[in-house]
Length: 280
Image 1 (spheres, helix red, strand yellow):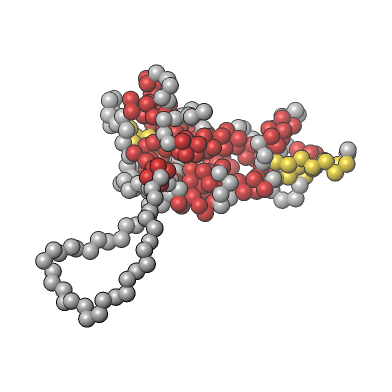
Image 2 (cartoon, rainbow, N blue to C red):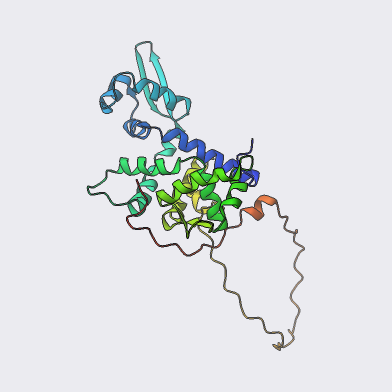
């Protein structure tokens, strides 16, 4: 079922990223995944690494991560059970430093040094806001959009005024800017800077290599266009002495809707970074 009024390929992309965020954002999930880095651990060994979890909290977290396909439970014998990353869980780990890099640049500066794990958790919390991914996608691809137009795209089956609570939250979080009531919305510098984060999350959730993030149709790096040579209609050229051999016929290029939508957009100038950066 479509989430938005965007092209089905884009709608599916947003849905996958939203699902991925819902898997890894819940409290302690990232810490458990990091604690499992390395050889598989018995339950007691893992519990010792995440000792801040109270009795009874670790088991449901592990079950949820196993159900999400990030952690694998291996029963060697009835009394020897270990937990470790699946291939999908291992592939997720390189995404986390990308989030840290973005958070260090764009999140508001705290009075104390913030550990990397907290940077990850703070960044994920902002991205998991309701409708956040879809709103950010539309603003990135269309640069400036009114609230009513955003509502028609992001929540086509809902009353259009329902777009304003998530929009106000994203403005308060420092990811979206507007010049005032009734004015269009656009990404802030911090929101625009999410390209590596959302690009890698999209690649990971689609099962693609993370280096494909730079080629994402919305969050990828736009390819530089070749400089156009001046065209002069009256320029005279001497006739060639010998005609070059004829080229073999080439098949015509077929355009599909996904190709037209996925053409990289021209990057706009970044807005000024709000004082202190996005709120944690």
